[in-house]
Length: 166
Image (cartoon, rainbow, N blue to C red; front, top):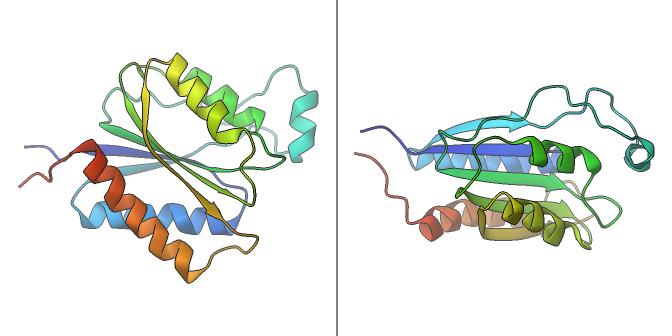
């Protein structure tokens, strides 16, 4: 039997967010899941506030078709208490997301409306957020954040009730 597939989809503007993402990926792979890591990138890197001035955001690559994935884990940095328009553009372009399960983690000091906004977009895709958390720190990464990332990895698998393939 094939391993269950998980897409780890990230938009990281800090090294701390990337470290959390790599920790989650490694923990899921230790549990024998097939994990693909995809980083959301705009075609043109701008300062956070400059994206709101654009009429259209161009992405460096097309959004992933998620049909083959059992779970999509979405990891984001949050700035200015809201999601970046790059993330919104990417999420709205995802194909075959109907009835998919998502897990969400944010790396921020204060999450503001960001989690609600992401959940709203996921709900419009007729999908569900099964687990979410916030790694709250002004520092890049702390030992507690590494521990919490490992726990989050196991929790999302338990929440989905995915069994490892023998």
